[in-house]
Image 1: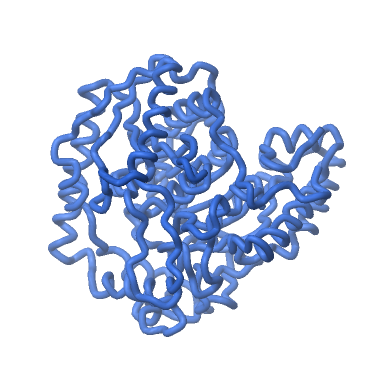
Image 2: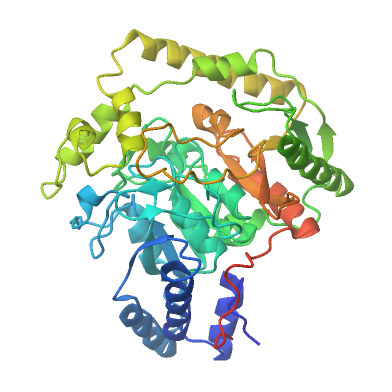
Amino acid sequence: MFRLLEATIDEIHQAMHAGDISCRRLVQLYMNRIEAYDHRSPALNAIQTVNDRALEEAARLDALFARSGPAGPLHGIPVLVKDQVETSDLRTTYGSALFRAFVPMHDATAVERLKDAGAVILAKTTMGEFASGYIGSAFGICRNPYDPEREPGGSSCGSGVGVAANFGIAAIGEDTFGSIRNPASRNSLVGLRPTVPLVSRFGMMPATPSQDTLGPLARTVRDVALLLDVLAGYDPNDPVTAASVGQVPASYTEFLVPDGLRGVRLGVIREPLADDTDPNSDDYRQVHATIDRALGDLAACGAELLDPVVIPGLRELLRRSGGSFEAEAAIDAYLARHSAAPVKSMREIVLSPEVVPSRRARFLEDLGHTTSDPGYLQQLLARAELRQAILTAMADHQLQSLIYASFDHPPEPIPANILTIAIRITARGANRALASYLGYPAISVPAGFAPEGLPVGIEFLGRPFSEGTLLRIAYGYEQATRHRRPPASTPALPDEP
């Protein structure tokens, strides 16, 4: 019997073949959940725009399925898309009221590939305004379904919350500085940040092009792998993806094997990677008690752990690798390509009173910086050192992956005045910078829950184009532990199968 709550892609396809569910019925069921839990109580604010043509598209796919079979590997699968990604038939707001009426002329490459695979773009999800945080002038505050008074992780907040609350099967997020892995960890999900050249960013507003990448969030590792099969590969509209040629397997699902952890060598980074981590706090100890149990599970499944792995000067290399020199030129060039865009520069965004104060303040820090600044050379040199240090440590110890807590602290309470104050919105103990500065792949997987019922994520980092290896590790851990559970705030509705 088909059950909607926590359904997977395979389960939906099996139900479709058995005649137990149609695509149109599936889309309507998810729309019902969005209406009940996103628009009313607990008003999670994960959905920016529901696709009012989704039912029509679902009916078309049902007719095609009856006539000739599935349209592609994601036939009839309702997918949520971060509102940073262009859709020609839906508004694209970037989380900002400035773009409340903006409809791009073309679909992003990622959206085209999803549609070609038979997916239904069910909705655009809320996002931290212009890809920072979990608030935006277009929608307000996105909330964590495990505790709506706490932050859900940003900036792909709506993508994470929407999948966790079962508003769709999976979602597309964007990760510049952890914006896929953050909401994955905060919402008991699997979130993959791919190697930067693996997935096309064409049709996505940039933040920092050397770090920007699109990737999947889902409730299971297999669903992440199925989405990556569709998204990965060369796109002439994003030339950096030329580096992926020869690096994409026939299917990432071939790495999802039983006993996949046996003999895998993993290096445990114990050193906090964020300057605001407090190892003496109670909540740090609670999170790391969960991480220690996860490490024990990995070892019990046959993984060989080097605990800890010491990388000399790691924190200092991370500090030197920071800074924003690319944003203004990249955003200005992106806006110049859109004649209908309501603003034409990052400077105009900063000057607009419509943008939430905290985002304006962050943009103001970036304004006037370019890749011609001497600091940019120092950043590039530091990142080269960082890559060498990581690859050397992995080679010296024959490691397939480095592992660490996605966050060293649980989700923060949402400040009451967050929409009106110009503070820097951060989450304590975020270990996201390492993969971001490297441009390497990393996957966050549910590791369990802290005592207050708040999700904890564990992150696996790999070498460039090692997504298959990371999926193998993540799958082995997931299958052995099954930590994912849905939030109590969004239970099955009375009429749900």
